[in-house]
Every structure is written in structure tokens, then in C-alpha cells.
Length: 305
Image 1 (cartoon, rainbow, N blue to C red):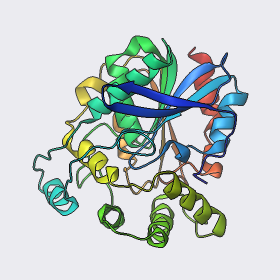
Image 2: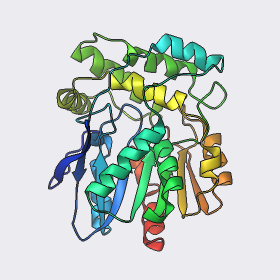
Image 3: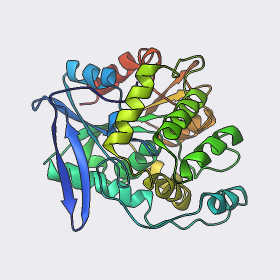
């Protein structure tokens, strides 16, 4: 489901000072670039191969990258405490973070500059949508269109954020010293909770794919720092309100991680936006879910080049 077996990509690093951002350029070279920005704790391999291939077959050049602190990109050093930050989350207290989502948006600019891409489409998933909002609002002339999947504009809080059962599962990932088997098990439980209702993740193939992601990047310490960046970055409402490029908003009606009302909020802020709510979609892009919005996505990209 998540491990991306799409082949034929070019890979490399966008670098600045001590920062290295790993990317994969899936081509073709003459396709219109589409930048893919992944969510919290996700490696670039989490982009489904059927989505990569669909974009290629539609004439586009998908480019994915590991956000800082994940995958093969640079790691940072702070050690936020999950429990402390969650208590601050519930009591609306300020949360400090080593970097902000704004810094992660700058990483994407670095990548585009490295690849000499002046203009492209952008698709942001979950936290990747939050990063993309900042990126697009700061550099609207560099994007043909924006697609937001399962994301939000406000800082997560107890009224618009995850259910407690999901927070509990996220908390498990923040604890150290889990064995590979424990990491695989908690991933199965998490995606089964936040994904499409009834979708079978508890199978040997999916567990093999999760194992591959762990082998690719054993260090999972960046997860808690990325979470701190989300909670420590102020609301993007004013920025998002300035976005004028064509925007497609895709969200699951039953998303337990980011409530569907957040999609309507974004739709209200971005005047030039369309919204697609999918009844049986949770927080992930399973193939049956992707099949329900891939034509909308293709039309959105075609019209806005």
C-alpha cells in the first residue's frame, strides 16, 4: 500500500549548508512537474505507486521528497516530550519547536531551485498540505495549481483535531526503543484506525512494505519533532486567505485525524477552490479512494496549466 515500487526515477539531494533534502524525480523529463509533499512521519515512499503512475500516464512529472527529519533527509537534534506537548495541546498553551512549518516550506523551495523548476503543480497531503499552504501563499507565481488532501488551516486543537483514540496511537510512536516487530504492529493498528473503514491492512504484503520503510530509514526520532512543528506553528488563516491559484480540496467524510469541517474551512478561505468530499475515505489514499477522485485531479491539473 505505502511502499512505492515505481521504478525509473532519478534521485538526489537538494542541499544548503548542513541541510540535505532527498528527492525522487519520477519523470518523464518533458512532463509538467507535480511536487508531492508528504504528511507527518511519512517518507516519500508513502505516495502510492498507482498515484505516481497515474500522474505519469496523464503527462505529468511527479517529484516526491523526504521532509526534513524523515526518510533519507537531514535529522535534527531536539527531543520534545510527547506528553508535555499533548498537555499543552489540550490547554491551548504555546509549544516550542526546533523548526516551523515555514522552514519546511523553504525546504521545498530549495528543492525546486535545485531542479531548476520555475513553475509546477503541487499536491500536499495532511501535514504536507499545511506546508504547501505556506509555500503557495509565499510563492504563488511558481505554481499552476494546488491540491490539498486531508489537511487543515488552523493549528490542531481538541475541537478540530484527532480523536483521543488516534492521539493515543500517535503517542505510541513517540516512545523509543520499539522493536521492528512492534513498529510494524503499531503501524498496522494506526492505519487501520485512520484509513478507509474495512480496508484490510493486517496482511503479509502490507507488513512487508512497512518493514521496507523501516529498513530504508530506521531512525524514527523525527516524528515527534515534526509533530512539534505542526503544533508550534501559528494558524495559517491569513496566508491561506491570500491564495488565488486554482485549488482542489479532497477530504474524507469520516477522517478521524483531521475532521472534515477543516476542508470546508479551507474552501471558504480560498475563493478559487473546489471541494471533493469522499464518503468512505478516512485519512489515507487507498486505491479505492484514489479511484474516486483521480478524474477530478486530472481535470484540475489539465485545466490549470
